Amino acid sequence: MNDNPVILGTSPKRKIIAIAMVLTIGLGGAGFFYFNGIQTAKSNFAAKCQTSISTLSENFQEFSNSSNKPNFLLDSASNPNILVSRLFDEVNKFQKISEENLRYSGAKKSLETIKSYRENLVSFKNKKEKKLRLESSNPHYTALKLWVNYAEENLVRSVVDKGFDRRLKDLGEKYEKRFDEYVSENFSSKEELELIEIAKAVNANWLNFANLCREARG
Picture 1 (cartoon, rainbow, N blue to C red):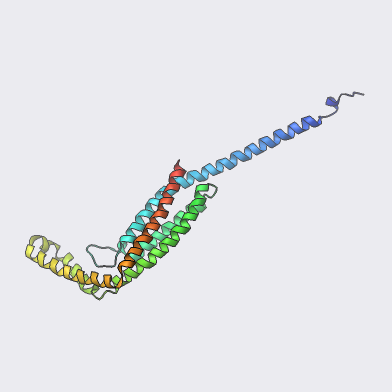
Picture 2 (picture 1 turned 120 degrees about the vertical axis):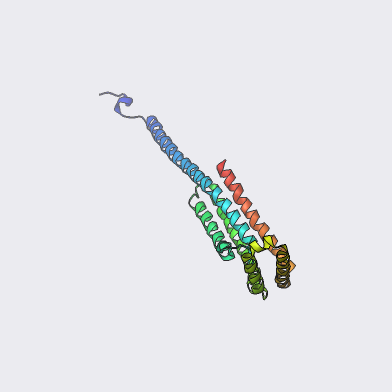
């Protein structure tokens, strides 16, 4: 009978070493896949967010500058309702990009910024739409619109006939002054300042987006 413990079986010390090696390999593999998942989420977020924040900025500026005041050569794409719808669609798109890449911490942070951005954007929209409604219901809207249509139809004559062009412009300035005065009387300077302040808050949120995208690109 052989009394050698090594031959009879594996020693407790060797069992502990073997288990430790298995755990180390297993945890190492899990750590690799976890880290790789974070890097993939970071890359995806970085690739998509840059285009989205650029479009977000453009859409907000377009809506901010939009008006229902009759003007030259405006098309349906300049309609404030279309512009604000496009803006909120882009916000939803950016939120989706963040939600799809939550393993990356920057994407989680962007969701917090999106919440604040959306709240400020709704405030801006509500205040802006009051002004837009005043423009649409303006009692001088029809007169100014008819002048715009007439001026567009006579662009060539305006170029060649300076007297006609001067009379046309004088008439347009009269209609436009009446239109603007009505809006000013019903949308106070205080409200104008509030609109500017809310826009600053929206742009501050956007700057946070831009910084998060920059960090993701590394």
